[in-house]
Length: 110
Length: 117
Image (cartoon, rainbow over all chains, first blue to last red; front, side, top):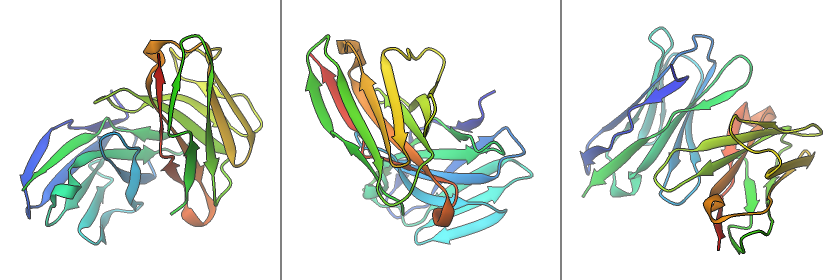
């Protein structure tokens, strides 16, 4: 079983809609959770971090963490074509190891 | 957020030669840096974990004698691709772990496109 799993997609949403990206992880001891965005041909950039259960909002982005169910999600409201990218979920364990998912490709259709 | 700089952004080298890629943490000290390789339309692949002042830890299947990693200071790690071949052509990305005020977070460099001809 992979440490971090994401649906590879592609996920397509119309412009203005809410895009929902999901990630599950296997280690209950995981402590920190991150979402990165990677545009084609570019390196990943950090967009959100979340450490405790619940929601964390930053502009159009909301990260949701549910440790009991071992999933973390990213919601993008009012999706824009510029949000089209691959979104990577990352999780750290007690040993400070970072584990990345394989990423979900998002396409926002104008 | 913290800044990680990678250089060069693009490099073309002849088959059989070596090329060095630098990764610098500009505004924080990074005891741990990571090197990834990514082929087009594929996922990031962790190559090695670089710890300042000690030998790098390579992932299974990565040739440590071919991909030399040096992490001589808290702000600089280098990856040298030795005797490069066309199949080594890829996008190489470094990242650095930031602690302190930024928390335990990984920040990525801009990446380096290597083309071996």
